[in-house]
Length: 208
Image (cartoon, rainbow, N blue to C red; front, side, top):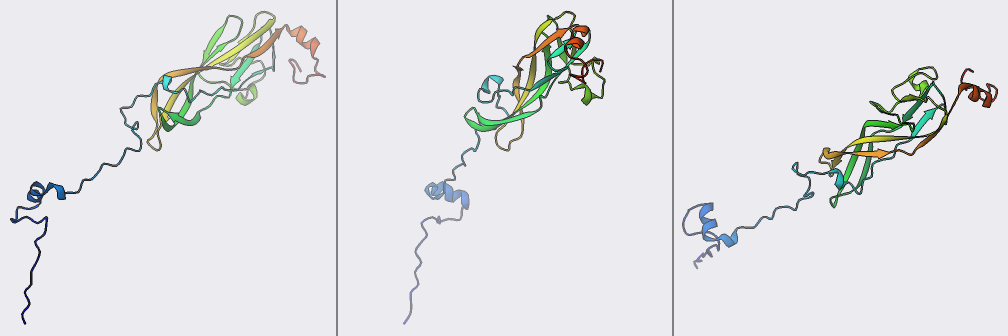
């Protein structure tokens, strides 16, 4: 008994040997459609511009401040001021996407409350940290010329960078200024200060 072998023609093999291009042309319905994967971060393009006005969910940090002598000054002698401002990273939603924003202090503007202001290249430091004796003039010190109570306000300028996921840091367009909490200082003559607090009461006072 003989067996007759029959082979069903394939639904997608053409009658000629025109190759893949011919298959696609003759049977386009057989070519699978490959969908492009959804963009994980539609704003991660290098062309995306983020401005400081977009950082509503990322308030700039309020930096701590300090001064010495603590809360008072001697007329005619330097009172020293400083801030602990440093680079700060916050997380939140930026333009609807999870992101990080990094704030870096780049400028310091001091208003000493007596009509005088100054801009310093750094946030300053205590005399001890600088290795200087008390009442030494520094980049962030000020000498009051009259008795009185003064309110000192530091305004810090920040540069900001943003990052979506692991896309790296990119600059934010513009800068941000953030005022600190005021410092209240009472300036008095040296004789008044020495009478108010002698060296027994305050061993670290002026002249002790």
